[in-house]
Amino acid sequence: MDTLRSRHLLITNGHALTGLMTAVWGAGLPALDARLDLGPAALGAMLLVVAGSALLSMRAAGRFAGPSGRMLAVALPCAAASLIVAGLSPSLPVLLLAAAAFGVGCGATNIALSTEAMAVECAMGRPVIARMHGFWTLGAAGGGVLLAAVLHAGVDSRLAISGAAGLVVAASALLGARMRAVPESPREASRATVDSHVAKASDAGGPALGRAHLIALGVLGAAAFLTEGAATDWSGVHATRILGADPAIGSLIYGVFFATMTVMRFSGDALRLRLGPLRTVRVTSSLAVIGYAAVLISGLLPSRPLAVATALLGWALAGAGTALIWPIVIGTLAERGETARRLSVVTMIGYSGGLVGPALIGLLAAGLSLSLALLLPAALALLVAITAPGVISRGRGIRPSSSSTTPPSVAVPETP
Image 1 (spheres, one colour):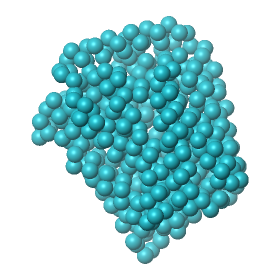
Image 2 (spheres, one colour; image 1 turned 45 degrees about the vertical axis):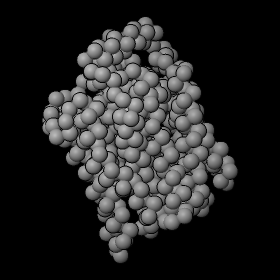
Image 3 (cartoon, helix red, strand yellow; image 1 turned 60 degrees about the vertical axis):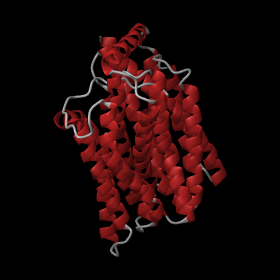
């Protein structure tokens, strides 16, 4: 059990480091944009490179990832190392190469983390993955705030971004070394536990969902991830280019978004237990709609301080509103005992929204404007609020009008 607890702690730290790495990327984008004068078109192209390389990497990594820690020990430091190159990039071509390497590393890291977390949760026999994701957002929020403080202090953006990425490289290399030192036997035993859990869930969950419903759940996840990705990659740029704020304020807004998401994820289990998954998804998706409405309104306000404050509130509400959509989707599939292959269909569709969405927003911003481009995640947030209760309720085998507060069963996330 001591070995298992050590493994649990290490994977939790892996989630936190991955969140911190994401913060270095997302919160550093306004500074990169300002230093290289990228503009919406170049930013959109760069994000599209990240998305494409990450999706290809995830598909390949799914064949090799396992509860051994080897992939995570390599992928996370490599992804962070690519950010050192990005922070020091003298031109757009070099930045695009770094972005491609970052996407490959992120895709493999996400698959490795999911596999490791699944093995630990099943071996422990109780839910732990939601809390791990809470530490991911905690790392992202803390990293965003710290990077904003460093930039506000006047530190050169090249030193700030590459220095922060270097710290992640060192910490993740140490994490990988400690993971390799954990004995193999608990991890091997956990795989049998996974198979047993899925078999029991399949017996209790009723007939498998149709492919159309799997696609609907995947699209729901993609819409939620796109609204989250819009904040990750465009909230800071919106503050600097539309509202006229400096890069430090842009990084702060990014950090606030993840701070509210962190609070919601750490309290999400208790909220779902109290309200049930259907009421929870109604409440949280409504918060996201209100948040994006505030972000869109902020660009129309004449006073810069008022506009920044309104955008800050809007992104905070959007963070709280998108935090639990994906965990509820995965919990729905776990209750039905869906197979790993069918779960991977939903997962790949869902992840594609978060990876491709920000790049699509960039392309729309180049052709129209960033303010108009943000109508896309706002519309998707509204779509989630309208359709999510029905999709989730049918997936759970109950009527949409039901307000059941039955707590969800232990979710078993699968690797795409």
